[in-house]
Length: 214
Image 1 (cartoon, one colour):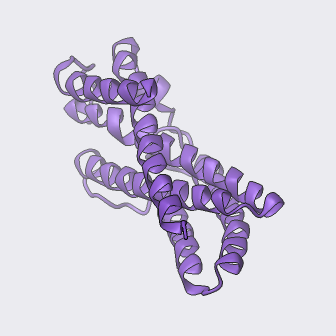
Image 2: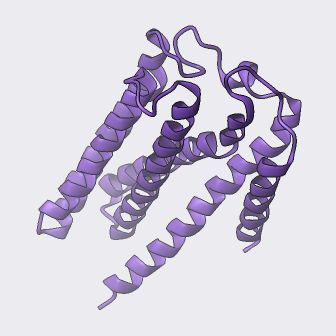
């Protein structure tokens, strides 16, 4: 499909552009600002996938369609992968700009708690033997996990002092890091990485459906 080709093109562009195109010289950040092209799109992707997963969990609770449960689980899985990669790239960035990979910053802490909450989603799925019961309980828990993510990542960090851009009194990256030259790479990178995750997830969904056939 066309969007798969678009995903590959945008990611290739973001990788090459992220390494080769000039970036503004800023105190402390310097060349590490290039990580913005990868770190932030990964978090965008995680949020999108967890949202899609929650929507399909609602759909499963309404219609009890096994396909909806499969889609919810696979998007949650992809969201976990993107979240872990986002946390790791953030820690690498923090090591260069804050002096250590982990500071217990509200944004870091909220992200880690969010991932542990979603990890429990998979533990729950695998701990119940009856597939229908597991799907129903997982769908309810998935909604709890998604609703928990909102204050942990988007509300609480803005209410406390934080070194992370966009949190507390620290301005967001659109004012602090992102100028017009970086937008040329950043927006295609965000779209490309999100589409890649959708691509990978659709492949996993197909495999799950094939394995569920009698």
